[in-house]
Image 1: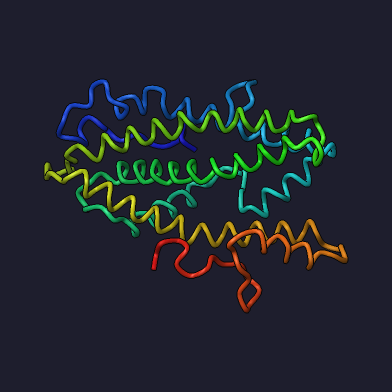
Image 2: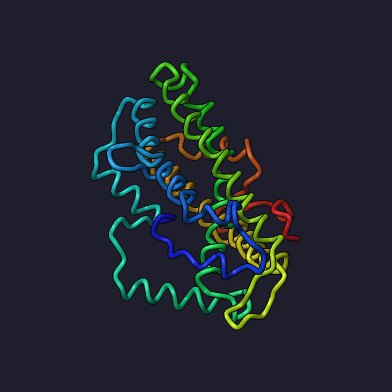
Amino acid sequence: MLRHLPIPDFRRSFDEDITGTAIDHIDGGLFEAHARDESGFGGLAGHDRMWFVARDIAFEHPVTEDQTARMLARMGIDPRPRSADELARLRRAAMEQRVLPDDIDFTLEMVVGRMIGLLLIEISAFHGFRWAEALLGDTELVAGEGRAGVLVSHIRSDEAPHVAWLRTALSEMRDRTWVGVNGKRHAGTDMIRRLWNRALSDSLLLRRQDNLNFVMAEIDAALSGRSDAHDLIDEMLSLGSVVRTADGSLADPPGTLGLG
């Protein structure tokens, strides 16, 4: 998605000069380099394909294309390109949820918001990748003599520069004065704070619950038909902090997300 984002006029968006900054390089290669890591380029595979290779090495049972499509559908990922009407509807919904002043270029708000959301995803994913690397590198549990774990380690190593460039660019934006379309000035600390708080709330509340529900549904599907399914799930939950609520859904204990 990064390589398809519209790029605002960064030089006009900030009062201070951005020459030589990470901001100035966003449209000069940073977005594209990040996108190539994630989704590949030409005949070169990106992380999206590397995960499937790691899976097939570790479990020796390559999943058919049809099953993969069903798995992506369960994740809510639709590979079909969006229609013009869908894109227009998404844009209207995003504009209704703006948190920055109306005179700030909406494209700027959208792109910076996306960068913050991506940074939070990268940080969260790092911990999942570390777990996957250890699991797939266990030669007593999975096949491949550890090669799947090595492949995940390469994916994880790519995340360090992703986090670094996003953090640098966002810090530069925070330390600059934002300029609205009518020339009004806004403190970058306030602009980034608003966007950061929204993204953090979405990550800890909306996406966190969605992720718990999705992962639990996948585990239930994988254990379907096993007589010991209930015992295995209970054992799994005993190893972490997530708890099952009265209605059967999963949730974090009160206070563990730092939101009161």
